[in-house]
Length: 269
Figure: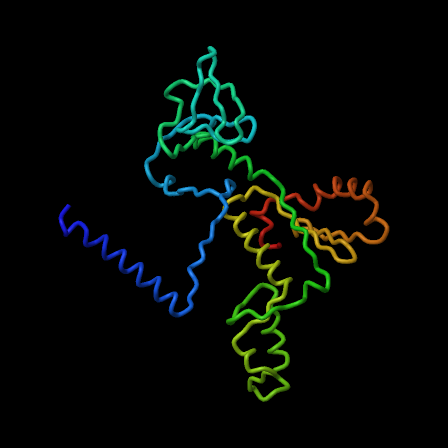
């Protein structure tokens, strides 16, 4: 061994000894090492397999009967007894499998084609033929508002209407109890719900026009608005606790208050 091979090693030793001496002189404690316990319930999934060309398999993945782990390219099959036995790597359960060589995963990531695109489209179309009922709380607590930074115009906002009504009694100047209020909009819980429902209805008008959509509101009484094309029904008193009557009433009123699709009723809701 020549001197040039020893120099890096000697240099590292010297640096280490120097740092040790410095810590001792300044009363510094040795850096604490922390050991993290291995948790098998935490794992990392590389989602780039969704955009990269990966191995594609048809049908369902082979799942462990004990813990639902998936048969993968590291799994081993024992065929010594005339049958195929896969011992799960996670729970050690013996699973009877029937896998041809081409059905066994060969790579880290495998995309399983559970159903064809045509089947998925059929399900999407079938999912449009449903009824959606929005049940909305309209009690006093829904009027509670919170400040949201910026100026926003949200469904149910009556500020401009109120401002115009009060403006006739003022001098036209802006007055605020708190200067910070000039840059915020107070939004109530009810406005948030109204905006969310309106967005859902508009999306269904564009993508699921054959659905029937109704609205029911409640506080100390229940108002069945239906699809908005007929007069609503108000339910109060002892009827609210009569399950049998409510079930019968719902069956009878559904054809009357939910008779049209969202394509026709969206503007009323």
